[in-house]
Length: 114
Image 1: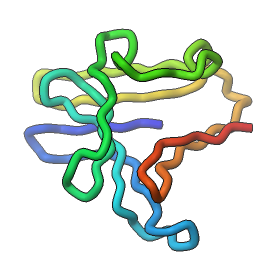
Image 2: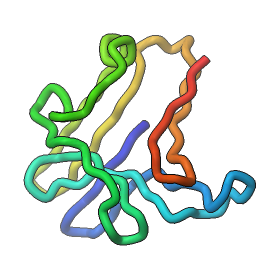
Image 3: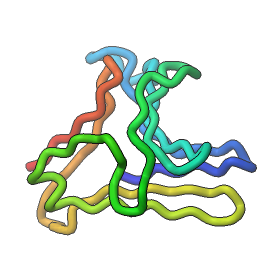
Image 4: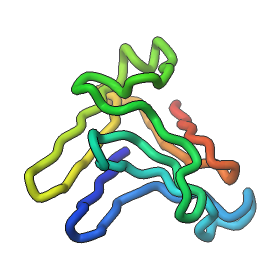
């Protein structure tokens, strides 16, 4: 999963929820990255923040509980530049693992792997 934002251009690459379980049009929730002070993940309901992770401390998102197996096997890389662009990528190094991320209609982030 890759997320990004550029402050100066007001551009955002984000993950959107479905409207309903049977309607794949854009729903109420968006998962993206916010870089107001330090990078953090945010789920917005419309234009309002619904959930925030802790800030990125260079190694992990402070205050976010990870499943131990996911934490050991996954990597998150956050980078930024002087122009205000911030990107985050969360991935598993095992290429044989099929993985998809979803934002549910209730605004919860989940993933499925097989």
